[in-house]
Image: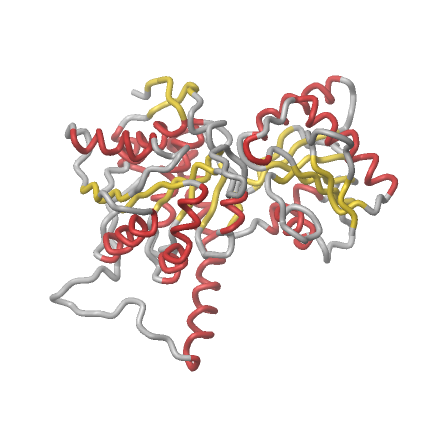
Length: 398
């Protein structure tokens, strides 16, 4: 029988990893992700989890160790954050290109400089083109659920891609919330034993990641991209199967009170829960506003996004990262591009906030919605506006 316990999101991830019965863990501690490898190391040392824990000297080495483990068919897990993810960057590309379904929890953290250990999405955006399936959590329950789901989808023979499970640093990683933990038998029914079809074996030699001259490189990368986009079918099926067993269903684009909404706010991650409270208040006042949250970041959910906004007049995109020199936040850029060819599309406005862990209270989301509508109606020349910045509030112009 399932049980309800209090867990911070970091420990929710470790419980999912334990119940997934991973074979190999290799991670290097970095704030705010450290609770994950610490707890997993305890589980291995205490016999709660029968796995190999590989201590390493850096995040680059952690991902390298994970590649070796995945290559022989081991169910493999790691975790990192911020600068650690950037140190991994070189090896992160290799995991996806070699089709090693490593699962990695990323406790999102702002990138230096100035030095920050607090959360935003700059690290996630820095790896958006690395070929990993990427999903965002809003709370501790989702951190547990989506970690389990990540193993199920990434290891599917029709997928075989690594998966990043993003949870906001401190806002989720260190916050304790109620989490429903299922029976192990339910997890076993959802998550079969991993059988990697291309496992390295000295009795059956094969080559992984050989030299690729220009004559084959383009074809190889195109084949990888086609397979990556085709993974979406399994992603959706995985969420359906998860919901059928555990009763919680997930979608690439989560909609909240979008019925008849003329103005939509788009968010990602834990700030979505604060935004929901603001949407509730505005709905109570009779305002036709709603919220959509991007759950699936890669592969990008083009079809679901277009369906979610088809009746909206204004779409306000809230980013937690600056795309330096660009037209707005990186999520804004992708959303606007995804809707570019639509005959009927909403006016799209870009806001950026919550950088370096700065809080976004309800009043700031109220401002984003109210001022976003003003910008859209006046067709302002502003490329984007930052929220919660001290001093005179001004937008960035092209």
